[in-house]
Length: 325
Ligand code: GDP
Image (cartoon, rainbow, N blue to C red; front, side, top):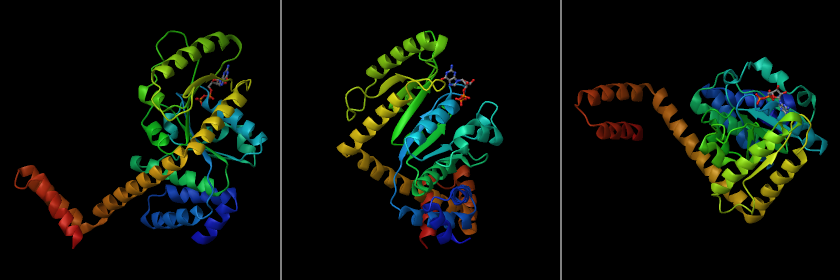
């Protein structure tokens, strides 16, 4: 595979090249990893940055409908939008790869949009790296906004939160005062809580739900470095498109504020450092696992540790010493 050529095509914004490039970064094969690393390095020279928006919400809350409506809204503004799904499609209600593709039919047909369903099989540790690299590829391909979608049930939110510039949480209108079992950790990550389906008969309930969440957010305002009024709860309707413009205005206000305050650059720098360390850990582990001599040694030492013949610490030291040779 000609990586330089592929990189050039990605930077030129060729969608098929982008799709191929993402397939490459999803691969676990050692030679593919090496090629992917080179590809990421080359495309980074394009120096493009998108607004990365994490989006979470439990199945049925209206994520696909929202992404389709919001994506079309952004495209009408002249922006290019990429959508990446993070969770395995099996985690989605009735989801299949095909189902995923037809979820956002209109958006999927737009030349200014790129939709990538989550890979059906990715080893758990690889999800973060795959997503991060897919985001980098979309940025290099000239997308202005990259939406990273998760289903709001797992740990992937934390991972996406660590790579997004903004984090949106979609909520459905509901009665009762308990906050729909939304994990506190996920709520704490949210910059905007969007109460979707604020239309028709659901509007009064949505209004109450929105007020509940606004109250909850005031209680856990923790980011001292956010402007007045953030994080914020707002009502939207993915069906009627009410509130889309307002929610985009809030997103850009917050993003611009963070840029002006230098928070943005600091966050990206911290993220880059964390990713480097993450990659290093992965690479070191892969080396341990792929080196037959080390593997045999780990096997033997593991037995000795289990029998109490060697201490865990000194066994680990011996493996490290062997690596040094
Ligand atoms: P997802 O599982 O989070 O991707 O949710 P979907 O986008 O598939 O939506 C789940 C259901 O909610 C579908 O029947 C949608 O038509 C409906 N829905 C989504 N957004 C809205 C909305 O803004 N208003 C109303 N009334 N229904 C909506």
